[in-house]
Length: 452
Image 1 (cartoon, rainbow, N blue to C red):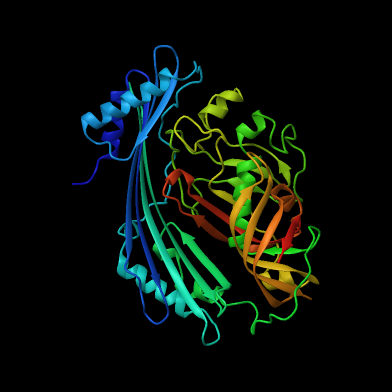
Image 2 (cartoon, rainbow, N blue to C red):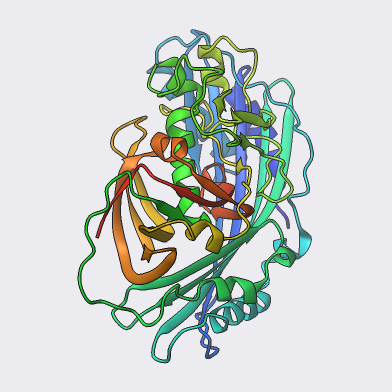
């Protein structure tokens, strides 16, 4: 029997009392790893149910509790008791409770994808792995991940909203005999019909063959050109959004753009938006608080425009409503964050054309482990994967994994070229509200130090 999330959310809210909001999310995922020879690891399935409850007691104090097994009346009553106990230990909080309402519809739910078919997944993963062009003796593999998300939010006394979406990601990797990642590509989409396994595999083909390991390149300073392929650029844009473009960071004066509305912060032509209903992203109608997910223009033609909000930061800023970007029911210390970033493409026809004027620099295939230097800081460290030294417009030497440090605001401000074509880069998370889907082109930029 299928679980009725909307009914569960209403029952949880009623258990919370006169002022309560309940948020219920259900995530199902399928993961399959395959190699070109047909070897395939057993499909792995996960099922994550999470119930959150936010209450306000008679003294105006707010409490939030959560658990992953609440479905019976007794379990919901225990959850309500936990939330009220949290409220009793809190200070008076006069912010409004989330105003639950239906968001605009989207086309982000696909029935064939929601079936989580392991046969289709294994076939696509094998196909992508086989399409990677490499010398004999190198390792090739591909990983398929698909998910279906359901979300229901209800408020005691009336008001409820639901949403559902699907997502799929196919990652192809090439590893050399020394265990270094030498080729990387990914494809992300709301539907399995939007992924071309062959193309993803071909894009994971190493940029330079054979691999020259002689000599050690010098440390590249922040003024040196850096070519970030979409899987490398997207995580830095996500970190940029979390640090610089949230309502909370502006309210507390931590964003480098505080007080700079309408002023230039990036080159002309750079437009960055959060587009939760964009056709080629992992769409959202509402956030975890039940607020409608609204499109927000963050940077408009190089000028800082707006920020995203949850209910808490909207109240801090004196705004009438959230923009639908809550990362947690009741808000989080770091505030809301953009999750469906869309960076408009530029006028460079291809990656090869972007590389052509680079006399000496580095091209990076992917970025992992982006870490801010402190809470709300735009300065970061990260690991660049499948990195190559560029000499006179051509990748000539494998660097492998490199250490990156710099400021994400400088990376955006230093953009010197963008390809016309964009790519959707997703980061799927067990908590659906933390999943990000960034559509961006390959970028030529600077502002990052590269340590080999």
